[in-house]
Structures are given as C-alpha cells and as structure tokens.
Amino acid sequence: MSIAGVLLAAGAGSRFHGPTHKLLADFKGRPLIEVCLEPLLAAGLDEVIVVTGAVDLDHMLPGEITVLKNHEWERGHASSLQAAAHYAEHAEHDALVVGLGDQPFVTAEAWRAVAEAEGEIVTAVFETKRRPPVKLSNVVWPLLPIDGDEGARVLFRSRPDLVREVACKGRPFDIDTVEDLERWT
Image 1 (spheres, one colour):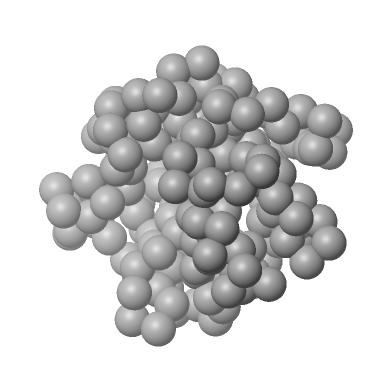
Image 2 (tube, rainbow, N blue to C red):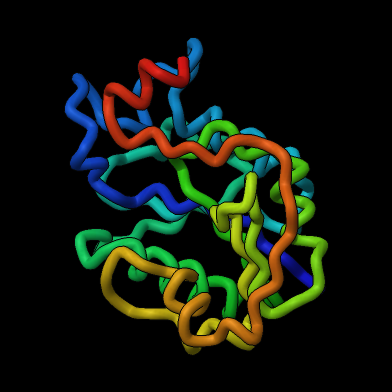
C-alpha cells in the first residue's frame, strides 16, 4: 500500500495579524511551516506533499517533497484536499494522511500511527478530540467536498461507519493568531 503524507498550507491565514504570513512566522527560531513539516518528513511515508496557495513557500521547502500549488485556494480547505487527492490518484497512492501546516506539536509518531492503522477513514484522537492528521483511503476521495472550509469532517458526519480513531500523544494546537503564536512559543 502506498501512502502519501499531505500538509495543507494554502490558506491566507486571515486571523493572523502579524508582520508576515503565519506559516513564515518565527516559531522557536524557525519558520512555522518548517517546524510543522519536520515530523511529517520523519514519519517515513512514501511521498510528502505540501499544498500551497496564498503565500509562496517554495523557498522554504526541501527538494525531496512534492509541492502542489492550489490556484483556487480561496475556495477553501476542501479545494486543497481535492488537489491532493487528484494528484495522489495519478501518482497511484492508495491513501493520504492529511495534516495542517499550522500545527507544530503533531509528532512523527502520530503521523505514523494514523498511516499504519487499518481503515478507510482514520483520525488521530488527542485527549478525546478528533484532530488531524487524518488518513483517507482512495475509496473515499470521491466523497470529499469540493468547496468550503471543511474536509474530512464532512466524511465523519456522512460516513461515521467508516471512521476509525487512533489515540495519539501530542498537542494538536493550531497557530491561527499572533496570540496563539505567543502562547505556544
């Protein structure tokens, strides 16, 4: 089974009112995107994909990853997920494990645990809360929404029979605001 890891990093970060885009913001001495990408790279999946859009991250990303530019990023989170699924289908991956480019505390172990778990839809659970990363098998890609700011959560509601939870250690906090950045650094 071929499994790709996907980091969604296409949004505008509109709630972050700092001097730069949040993914470029300094997080413990490094850009936030680098900190979030590191555990995914360490997870050892078959391919690592970063979906970009609102901000150019090419200069920040290592050469061994696949960069997908979502030119329709303003359509929401779902459009980035669609771009990743479309690419993965042509690359003949069997599943995607999807996470967010603004969650610096998700560990490589969490990425691996979700990737290795059996199931069509597998979600990490941190302290009883479902949070990314989420594994989506190619069987469910046609069910993904095409617009809006929801991705896998739509499937959680429409196909709860396919959802499997995996307990993970770590803290799945998002960095959405300057205050979040200050709190977690």
